Length: 402
Image (cartoon, rainbow, N blue to C red; front, side, top):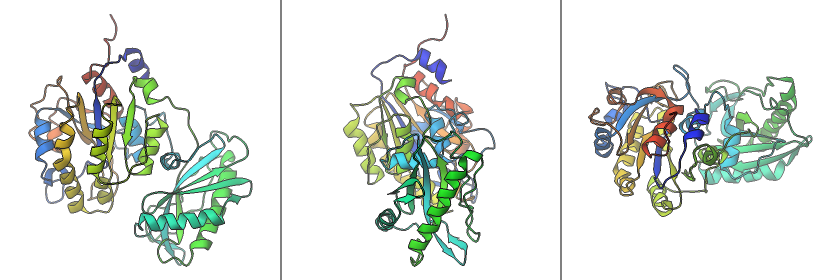
C-alpha cells in the first residue's frame, strides 16, 4: 500500500489532524459501551456529517499492542514492521539508539515471596519513578561488556538500553516478556528465542537481579518486569512515504517514540489534553499532519474502570470545539485498538472512526459509537488503509492509472 501511495502523493496546503483516543473501543456493560454511555454531543454531531466506520488494527481476531495499533494508523503494515515496545519507549524518552543496542520497556512492580502482587507497583507517581531510576543508573552502569542506560518514563514505566560493543544480529532481541501478565504468578526469566539472543538474555537476567537487590526494601516498587525487547529497525520516514511534514502531540514517551521512529517531530510535552490542544493551535501553521494522542481513555479501560473511561471520553468531547475552530481539511477521530473495561485489557474488536472532510457522503450515522459506525460509508476496513482515506480526502493523491 505504501508503495502505491508514494507514487500518487502530491503536495498542497491542506491540514490533516488525527486524534487517537487510546483504547477507544469497548463492549457493553448494562447494555451500552463506554462510548455509547458517554455524553458526547460534539462527536455525535460530527459523526452525522462524517464518513464513519470501524477498522481492524492487525487482522480479525488478533489483539494488538499499542505499537502495532499506532503503526497501522500511520500506514505501516504491523505484520511487516514488528517493532518491540522497548525501542519506542527509549526513543520517546529521548535516548539515542544504535545498531549495537537492545532497548526494553520496563514496569516497576511489587513482588512478595517470589510472586507478583502488583504488575504496576500501584502506578507509583512519576517523581518517585524518576528517583528510583536515577538510583539504578548510579549503581548499574555496566553488565559484563554491555553499557546500561536507564531512563524514567511516566508513572511506573521506565526504559533500559543495553549497548553492546559490536553490532547485533537481527534476531538478537528475540526474547519474550518477563511479565506473565497476571498477578499471583512468578516473573518469567529472560528466555532467548534464538542462538543470537542468548547474550542479551543473560545480560537482561543480571540486570533484573541487580535491580531487585537494590530495590528490595521499597514498599511497592521492589522489582522490574521487562517487556518489548527490540533493536533499531530500518523503516521509511513519514515524510518520505506521504510527503507530509508531521507533528506528534503526546505526553507519554512510548507514543513519542512511535512518532520519532517514523520521523515525526515529537517534542517532550507534559500537561492535560487541553494543554495538548493549545500546543496544536500554536504549531498549526508549521506542519501538514498532526497526531494528537489522548492516553487516559485506555488506562481506565485496562483498570476495568468503566465509569472513569466514560468520563475521559466525555472530557475530550467537551474540548473538541477547540480543535474544530482550526477547521482542518481532514479530521479523523479514532483509537489505536479497543480496550473494553469489561475485559480489563486490549481486545481484538474493531475500532470506531469518524472522518470529517468536505468530500464525504455523511448522513448515515446518528451518533458516534461502535454500533452506529457499522452503518457508515467506510465499512469495516484494515487500519493500515486509513492513511489512504486521509490523503484522498485532503486531495493529496493523484489519479491511479490512465
